[in-house]
Length: 188
Image (cartoon, rainbow, N blue to C red; front, side):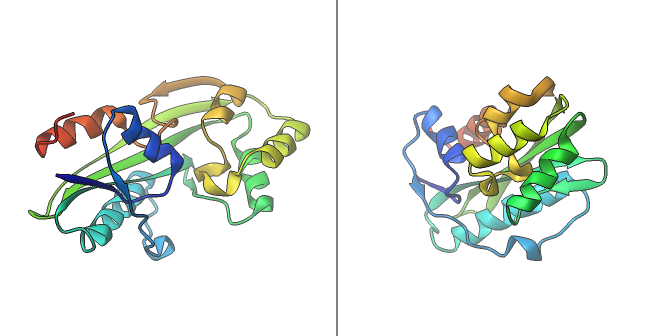
């Protein structure tokens, strides 16, 4: 059966490449801002499932893989920053603090309409960041593409401690994705 990734994220593509699975890429262009929730786990799950359903309409014979991720600190949810000023603000707020990187995965068997989904969380503690390294990071990386304005390299550069499901390098929980795909008969 054909596998379709409902994302143009190079990290999510890497997740499917990592398990050696041939797939098509068909980014979902839903209005993510129209889907809201104050709970980061529910928000990411709603978004991942909406993206999968949207792409299933275009690929009724496929298994659709989609995901979403945010960073969360207390009641604050950090999605992709709107601009470099907001990216700077995000990194300052995450500096010297513990926060969560929340990742949702949805795998939809389009023909049957059956969806399997999950949310996994990684706790990260950033050390205090100085002005120069924040500015250097913003200059060197495409921070507008990352939830919370950071990705895997930032965790290596800035984190004092991490615990939980290490899903930041792919922005999908890869191990759980393998289980879901097997549930749909994919030979992974």
